[in-house]
Length: 285
Image (cartoon, rainbow, N blue to C red; front, side):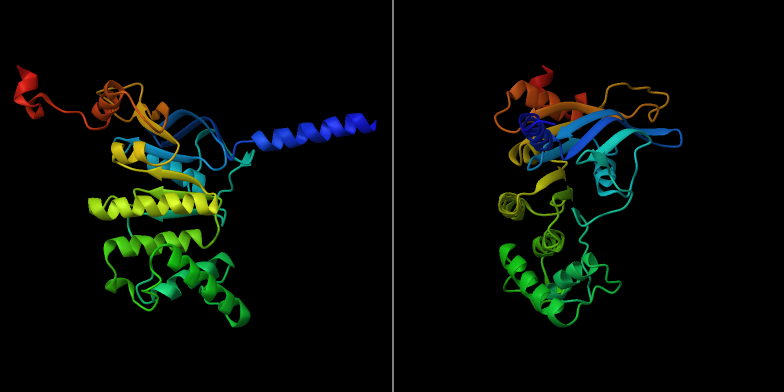
């Protein structure tokens, strides 16, 4: 092979690698027996994107996150990570934060984050020793400072507010240096003021650690505020006699930013339909 051909091949391979999506889904379907949850889901996500997922309860948003995590598998289609099938188990390259706080009540804030680092190293107990523990302790303290818990290292979870517990859960996930961070309605139980602080925190961590984020939310305004793209999950086909005969797909894939009010209202109506009895009197006249 000539040098010029080798050079062109090398350049071509670099370009190909540069555009390979971090997540690629083709005709993804998911069902449990006769109940179809997802169907015909096609997605392509580049590294560094921040995707928010909205949709009615039970439409498969969390199921899709679990498929990326590796604890659920597609019934149909193909879901790829860096062009290869996603492993059927969680990995350190994918971290997740749930609405319910996944912290250890018998450990301090600092010990919780150190333990997350220990589990990453395949320690059954999460305990580290010697030099590894010293390094992990320093990394944990730095991470807790980043999420605003530097003052609470020696507190126990029962001594924390809801927002502080969620900051702790995020620190546990991010300290493992995942490429992909999965957030499953992480702020649903928080007051509006605290949620605003959490939004700022997640956006800061997204930029600082160059994460690719998928976040499920039930709040359309939150979905349009955060990240780069918003996916709306909904069913394209309905059978009133068999509500689980068809699954949800992504009906909208929109860039985050200014959204025309009619389109916003249309999506909002899909997510939480307003019955005639709930409409304002002025709109019924």
